[in-house]
Amino acid sequence: MYIELQLFHLPDPHANLTQNVDTEFQLHFGVLVQKDARLLRDLRIMAYFKQCFSSDSNISTIKELAHALASHCPYEVPIASIKIRHLHCEVPSSEIFFSLNATIVGLAVDSEGPENLPSCLGLGIVRGIDIVKAMLYVITPVPHNSLEKVNVLLQGYIQIPSCLLQEQNAACERQTKTKLD
Image (tube, rainbow, N blue to C red; front, side):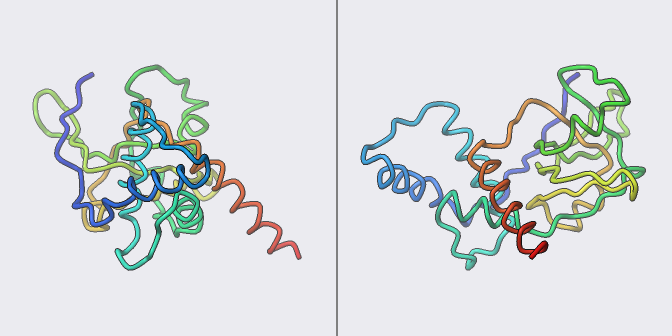
């Protein structure tokens, strides 16, 4: 399956994240870390999702970004309003929601053309799924007016940077403990 990709890179007012990450690594490890492809991909994904926040949010480290994303209020997406397409594998219908949880997805609009290729508007993180309420919870920098057009989620192999998942778990544990006290 081929996907028509539109330019979904939003203007990046937070381009200094990579510089701050370099500084953070240098302070932590005491050496300049050579950037490999995985690290560069992770940095680009983090810079993309940093756009969920205003430029005056003062997020300058990975830890701050991870905490901000864990605390960010997600969009509620009714499951009935979207189709789910797995790009690189077949997933049994009973496992579809398990495969989406805590993943990065393409936010797309079905095409009316003869090839039926969806147009990708941007990326989102599926933060959670509530089967009882039939809702997906998605974090994305895509503007709300564009998000309303999305009717397809495209799941590929883009992974959430592990440093964000680790911090997200820690942030969730702190929130849970606070609620239980």
